[in-house]
Image (cartoon, rainbow, N blue to C red):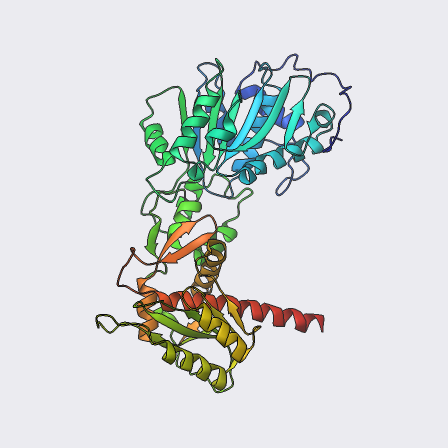
Length: 483
């Protein structure tokens, strides 16, 4: 079996395609059935049989005549985009008849591009016929009989220089800039016959190279440009299962309806429409659906000595500042929100903020204070000395990789009704003011526009407190189990 590392000479004979269809979609389908093994999930360990919708795609990419130079497949998540790309890549390397085929997989980052390489490598490992005819290296696949190789790179002009791919696969086109797309297209166009194939979910903005290509593909006027879009109708009901099926060809196969239902209940609507229904929606919209926050209000007050996590988001000058408490069973109570009453030159009363923090530590069993350090680092250092460094921690709300997942966890708790609050109208206003930008790391909460008077500091403080309360709750559960 092929493994990464140094290789000896290949001793197996070349694959024999005598009696097979000529290079094209029919050969690709047969190649998958005879030489590719399903690496995981439904049908794992069995020969790969392309579904009808997958056959439709490869027919468009590898027709019997008039092969396109560019292909774009817009497809929601969890429908096997990367797996299909890996099969197409293996066909190009082993069975396409291309002289010295070079397959390049590019994406916004090389880490993303390597997903296809990993799946293709695993398919080779599972197939004795392919494994004895290929070298699997850490960053590439080589097939000596055809002179073929598969490489990965970031989709940048510099990374693509010097290559001559017969097949260029652009994974997640929505992460690629217009300049990098043009560079990739020009590299792939060096050979008399080559294919640039982009497979992606929609972008979070119509101001993107992907949307321009989608609009071009929808015109259906260029035989050299193959376009296939799987998407629900714009404006459809979020829970319309017929629309789910329209957008997700794998639904009922390796994508389950109950799994999709769970996601629909907990994912932000804009994100669900984009990632799961294949629709084009704006990046910025209300963070929570209308009315769901107000419905979670309960008549509950914090008791003296109750265990809480505090979240703090402060302004350096005239903006608002918030101190929010979250219990370990996720009840939210804002302790204070300081906002400019409309006075010119008003500044946050730092002394009052410090008094409020001290009062909270004195009145409640504060497990932790999670505070954004921007503009308040000296106060955080002082609070750490006063209340203990392990109880006062920095929570950088400007760090996308932390805030995105944290905001998504709060969103899921709201939608699943696992969170309550005391009905404070100041907090409700901040929540209503909050919009979200969907990114690869989650929803980034923000104002509706820069320098907007619509404040969201209490929302940010709540997210920080909730995230740390959830962490402490999980930690306590693990201790209980181990005991």
